[in-house]
Image 1 (cartoon, rainbow, N blue to C red):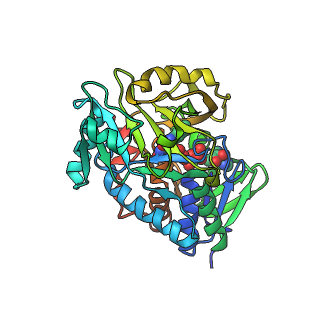
Image 2 (cartoon, rainbow, N blue to C red):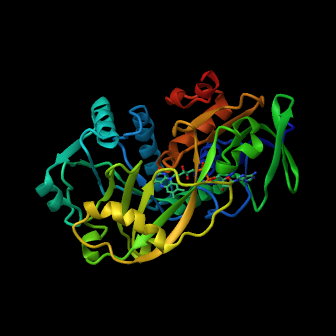
Image 3 (tube, rainbow, N blue to C red):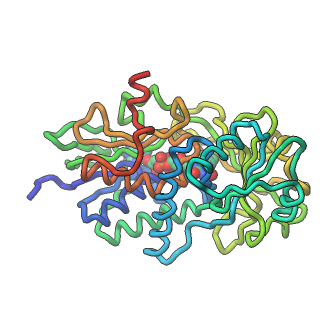
Amino acid sequence: MSTRSYDVVVIGLGAMGSAALDQLARRGARVLGIERFSIPHEQGSSGGETRLTRKAYYEHPDYVPLLERAYANWQSLEARSGERVLYRTGAIYLGAPDGEFIRGTLDSARAHGLACEPLDAAALARRAPALRMPANHTALADADGGFLLAARAIRLFCERALEAGAHVRTGETVLSLGNDGDGVDVTTARGRFSAGHAIVTSGSWTGDLLERLRGTLSVTRQTLFWLWPEKPSLFALDGFPCWAAEIGDAPGIFYGFPLLPASLGTTLGVKIAHHAPGPVTAPGVLASAEAHEFEAIRAAVESVFSVPLGPVVAAKACLYTNSPDQHFIVDRSPDLRAATFACGFSGHGFKFASVIGEVLADLALEGRTRLPIDFLRYARFASA
Ligand SMILES: Cc1cc2nc3c(=O)[nH]c(=O)nc-3n(C[C@H](O)[C@H](O)[C@H](O)COP(=O)(O)OP(=O)(O)OC[C@H]3O[C@@H](n4cnc5c(N)ncnc54)[C@H](O)[C@@H]3O)c2cc1C
């Protein structure tokens, strides 16, 4: 019998850590999760209520098999908890036919046999009357697109893990990690734990614990806005899909959600945001967002709406933890004998949390995974 306190310690219970905790507890591991704030909270990258999900993934076709598994794992979470997390509203993508977004989406759809239906202006107006097609743009409908209830998912992962015997410590910051024989020694502000393995899912703060990653990650401040549109009924959850658009020369994509009912516990209004790294900041530094900051986004997205978007009714800020190439980093630590980390989710990681949790549990307990993550290994930066 091992004299270590835990088989695995998970450091940081945002989206990735809470999913890993659930996977480990379900597999019977003695697992401890440590979180510096509460569960869930709004100081990191997983704060807030909703996240967009897409399957025809423009960022790279190699993400699609992981997404297939992620969707299955979201359904498993729903089945095990009896609560809904994934809303497949369908998603509409707009952009220039030769732009990175539309080309990349079609490449992924073709490579993996995903249905991504082209819509002309009339079909778009029938499917989503609040949207319209700007000149020289094209539209695609992805039936697998939609949104996830983020705070609910994190809560459910942790709830399932606790029910399966996991231990959780909140309001406690991990200060350092060190080798302890073939395991790991975890020092917090309140104690020390020895474990067979550590999983580091500390988001923007990853460089505090894994020094080598300090210069690899950049943290940016991102903003989110909620609007009260002129014709709210056109945005209702039972008719309006999620959407994403590459517009003009603006970097990244703009995206938004249907108008969600109060019963889902979400913020008032229609959520709209811009997915492109914002100004660089430090981990944990989250100035509040101001309504006037939406005006630059409004100027861009007006071209894809047939109705005025109305006033801003809420504004929030959140952090992206960006890797140099905007792709995730998931690997064993090159410095510690028994640690695995996942970071650099670059503003598009939430939809993958349910599969990243599985990958991390595989790597911690078995040293390898059957899931195709080689393109996400840290070694790609080491060799560059
Ligand atoms: C504005 C915004 C919009 C986004 N939209 C989307 C979207 O539509 N679709 C999508 O798929 N993704 C989206 N994302 C990205 C997605 O939310 C993130 O990729 C994901 O939430 C990252 O999760 P994480 O667990 O890595 O980080 P975090 O959620 O930040 O978790 C890290 C956790 O570690 C804890 N921690 C840190 N250091 C320590 C320590 N030393 N000791 C103990 N605990 C510690 C932190 O408190 C935190 O809870 C968005 C992100 C933002 C900010």
